[in-house]
Structures are given as C-alpha cells and as structure tokens.
Length: 148
Image 1: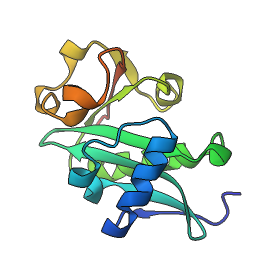
Image 2: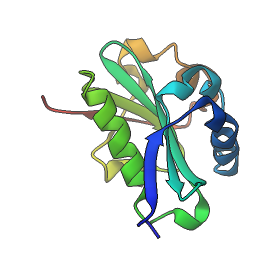
Image 3: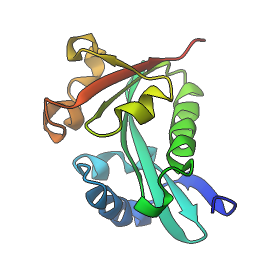
Image 4: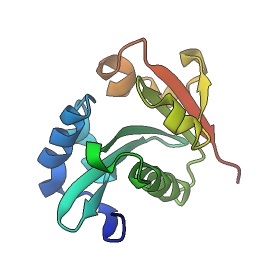
C-alpha cells in the first residue's frame, strides 16, 4: 500500500483537505490557517492519506496535527510524516521538539519522545494555540531533544 506514497510540502490548496482529515481524526484545526506552510502531506497517488505540521520557533518546534486516514494507520505513514517534519526542522537548526497528545502517546514514545510536565516546555511555545486553547489541559505533553 505504501509503494506509491509520497510526502511533499503542503500547498494552500491542501488546507481544506488537511482540516477535513484533522476533524475526521478528532484533532483541532485551530492554527492550521496560520501554519499550513510548515505542513507536509502524505499522498497515495492523488489521495491525501496523512498530514502533519510544526510551529517553528527560534530554538524549538511544536509538532502538531499529525493525522493518518483510518485505513492507512499502522502502515508507517505517520512514522514517515514525523521523520520528514523532524528532518526539515533539524536542517534549520531546531533540536527541541514538543507536542501535546490525547491519543498517540505510545506512537510518539516509539519515535523517541518522552512525557514531560508542562512547566518543562520551552517558553517560546507557550503562546501557541495548541498550548493556549486548542488542546485540553489533560493532553499529554512530550519532548524530543535531538543530539547535534
């Protein structure tokens, strides 16, 4: 199923489809309009089957909106999206990655993220929509620090 999978930067034309995939996945769409330029989309042929984005700050990034269509889950699509996002930000010098999740703690733990308390989050990220109001206070906060 993944032979034809391509991951590419999102375009403005992808925004509505990204939002639809997020809604179907039970994820917030707040902030997508402002940050779509940092999103990538996974395509099986011409069909969008996954997406993910980051909110980049000077020394840290917030991984957000990683979603994979139900029938593609468990096939490596999410792993490839996260790897692409991390590689893109790392090439810009970002080494600290954070996220909030209610349902994917095990998935991100398998990618090297560790659960942390919210008071350990890089202060640059605290003004993001994810930390302000898009994700509930009950969401698990996680961090990955890449070695240089």
